[in-house]
Length: 473
Image (cartoon, rainbow, N blue to C red):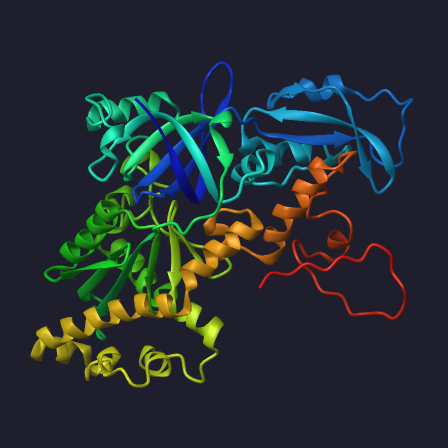
């Protein structure tokens, strides 16, 4: 069964296939224009980087390519291509690696060469080589078609969970992804399309916890699917609450996960309590906090759990955490950052958007004496973050930024200006005539200043050639 349609790329990763001929499959988590979620398993892209002889051009020098092609991680070394560098036109050889994760090790082994195009994420490489943005037209063989998938995509083979799981694994996927549709396709099946507002699904949640023990007392969640919201309340034992939230995430399959101050409170508390309930082994915590958009299996233990990154942002594979507190702070610059203050700032005359009179500093007593009021308070704190994101157009802004920078929406949401600029400039470098060798982020001035990515210099008087200023608003 084949299916074709337009969709927006939310996030991406890859799967390595162990075989006689090394293969890598790109995973693209998307939201289709029709409303269902899609995982594309894209075949045909090989990991690579370029090497050249260091220094000035040396057309007479015969490089030792045999030592390069003889490395265990190297699959092929291509014929040389002339590229422009800061030293002038030079020969460049393309080195194909067996897997993307081998590139870092090869960079160390080949430190006597000048290495370019070697620190580009594999998913980004796909978008650069095919000149794709977040909005694409794609199609291929349907391996799984769930209940929310289009009826014309279904047959007896792709609606059976057991059969679909086998087919997905055979196609290089991780297993039965918690999405509406899984499609196997090739590079030629993807193409850029006109932008459109993707019907993203958002999941907002809030926890009320014990002041004395940190235990989760209750939780609330709201799922916003194309403007229609559904409310969900969770009480009972702490395990029951966490399992209920996790099941809801996996069943409803949201693209965005939000709340107010979830980066600093709710997500860390979920992680902490899952570790308390299931100290070891880690995989036993999957029913408690397995929010990643990957199969529920032992093999996915590294990707299924949310992880906090060094830049404060959480990463949930296949989904985008978007803290309404951080969005309000960036956009409004409020004098105070509490949910009550921000709500009053945005809706000064709307009393339906006011927090209830519950003393959070006495939550144990409030829960014991007024559980119904606390639950209503919790539910209100779940709706308000969605209202804030809607009012600030936060998700629409990120999608618009992705369409301009030609990146997945996740990179537009949690990436850096230098990554957005790289997405545009590298395309120009690769397609210029002659092509330009793309240096890594630790080469040139950035290596001198020991800062990778964007950097700032004190302005010095004078005239400089080749000055370029790029920014995103």
